[in-house]
Image (cartoon, rainbow, N blue to C red):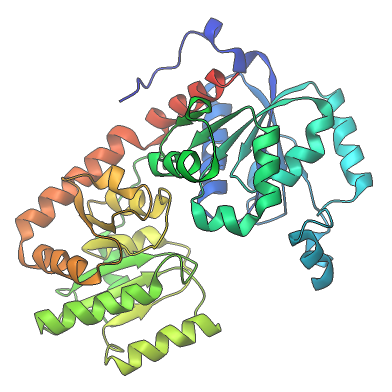
Length: 401
């Protein structure tokens, strides 16, 4: 494990310059939240000067602005027509006007920006727009195949052209870039994702209230999953897992709880259809977006990551630090790098039956559940909280230049 102390100040070129941090979003999702937490730590613990550029507005915009001067790359994006958004996606139109980009260039030329950190692989358009300044950029890549393809070939070409180095959120992300997209391993460093700190565990009352509101008894066994999207996050697989476990175990007191995502769209109605047809309506609960996801994780017994693709999801770290064993698929992203052979179980890709076997093992074996959960919590504290991981990320950024 890398040391948690910063290198001597004389070694930190990064601290001698003013830096620009770019976020693809100001939404309350994994990558923007991790960047916000990192910048909060950096402002508190270092003298590094920085500014922030957000691709779009969002609910975290004020939080970024409290830390540093913050600008928006495409301030009028939400008001643009469907046709304009389609043209942008096809690469025929920028999200920001030429006049707005010119103002940004003038500002960054005059403000002494010397280094750029771009958070996520989706910021190719911004990197190209800022390229006339001639500033070195490092891109922190959190994405695997799905989002790389979704962002388009033009975006990928821009990122590769205008980034001199890369940081990845897991070794799985690094392997994908090298094996499938022609990146050089010599330009990549891996720093695993992290969460702010060890949280105060939700109270017994909060956990009990969650269960009461969902109609789950206090002595029930609860399996939790989480995610916003449907296909990539595997909500349909979560329902299949619930059906498989309940068919094999044949007990009433096992419930399945999904946190996150919408519960008012066509994708949810498809999921609800399967739940009803499988006779699971009383045992599978989709609660949508909540303001207190940790309370829901705490009200569960184990966390199942059924994602088809997930680089290194923060929700797993949040559940793990609460002492929940983590189950995941192999070859679906970076979480096997965390779970290994002691913090839960890794099963073959999309093998729902194999995951059901492990769920049942954990239901039946309380000691196994406690051991793997305790080890999961210990790993997060040792590797994936800001006091440990933020200095590693800072050092990695410095080493890119």
